[in-house]
Image 1 (tube, rainbow, N blue to C red):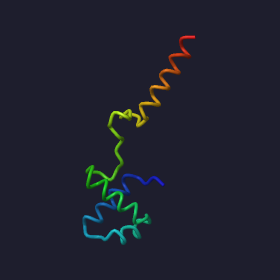
Image 2: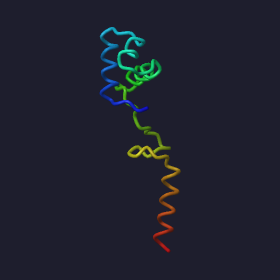
Image 3: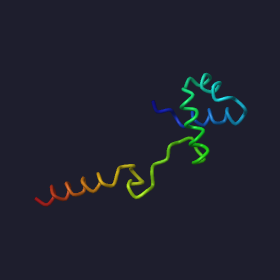
Length: 82
């Protein structure tokens, strides 16, 4: 299930104010593993939001693997040039 960024930020704020991960999980009705994931994201990215991969294997804007984009572009080119 995808949770809103607002909820994720509220959970992180509660943790920073001293709430335990277990208590935050109960209070916000999310799993402990979700809380742990958000803590890790917040620690590494500065935000509990997942970031789109920016390496060469992904199109950074759309998050689509480049090998699929290449196939789609080729198919589109072939279709337009018949």
